[in-house]
Image 1 (tube, rainbow, N blue to C red):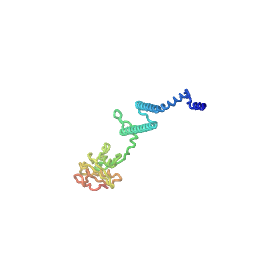
Image 2 (cartoon, helix red, strand yellow):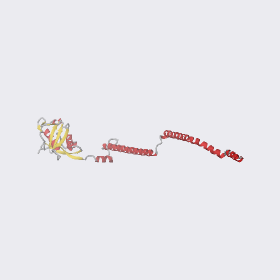
Image 3 (tube, rainbow, N blue to C red):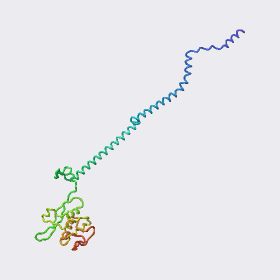
Length: 275
C-alpha cells in the first residue's frame, strides 16, 4: 500500500522545465523580427520609386534647359531624315534660282545687238551675241515698187528695188517698207515715190488670195492725175509680188471706198496689175 502511494506521487510531479539556451533565444528573436521586416518592405519600395521619379524629373528638366526634351532614337532618325529632305529642297530651290538669274543675264545680253566702246564706236559682237543673233528669224528678200522718170519719153514708170524684212506678217512689213520710200542712193539714181510719208498701214489681211489693206486718210493727200494712179499702182504691184496674193482691196480707216481723190479714181472691187 505504501509503495503504490509513492508511485502515484511520483507520476503526479510535473516535468522540470528545461533551461532556455542561447539558440532558442535567437530563434525566438528571429521569429519576432520577421513580421517587422515584412511590414517595412513596401515602405522601402515607395521610397525607391519616389527617388526614381525625382531623378527622372530632374533629368527631363536638365534636358529641356540644355537642348530640349530627350527624344527617342527613332524620333531622332526621322527628324534627321526630315532635315536632310528639307536641306535637299532648299538646295534645289537655290539651284533653280541660280539658273533663272543666269537666264536673265543671258536675255539682257541678247538685247545688246552691238556693243560700243567709250567713244561710241561700234565694236565686234561677243560670241554669245553672235549666237543669239543666229537664232533670230531669218530675213527675207522682198521688193517694193517705186516710180522712175524716163528721160526720153518723160513718162513715169514703175521700177522695183530690193528690201529685207524679218518675222511677222511679210506683206505688212513690205507695205511699211514701201511707205518709207527710196533710200538716198536710190534717190540719186532717179527713184521717186508717189506715196506720201504720212501714210500709215492700219492692218493687212489675206483671204482667198485677196489682200485687204487698210490705210489712214493720208492715202488721198495730193491725190490727183497721174500721181494718184502711180500711188495705187505702187501698192498693187508691191502686194501682188507674193504667190498667195492675186489682187488688192483698199479701205480707209476700216471703211470701203468706191472712188479715191478729187478726180474720183475708181478703186471698187479687187484691184489687179494692169496687163
